[in-house]
Image 1 (cartoon, rainbow, N blue to C red):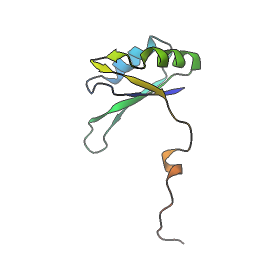
Image 2: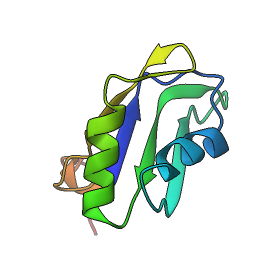
Image 3: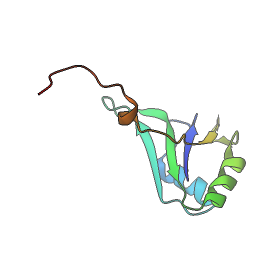
Image 4: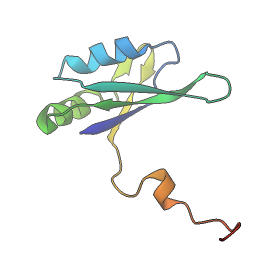
Length: 95
């Protein structure tokens, strides 16, 4: 299950976030979202946990929990079309 972690401190590293979620189970991947141009953190991250029960336990335990002087907001990611699939097709050249 993929979780989104919002309102995290900009000082928290990927390793620290992974370590926090590993207290609740196996973490296969953690991705901190950064600005493409500046490389600055955008304040949210994604955490992949393969076991749904472990992920649910982490979600319940860490949602609204304080970590690095910030109140984390942990949610399930929305399922649905990917960003590219959901964009309307723009005009342009047609062959």
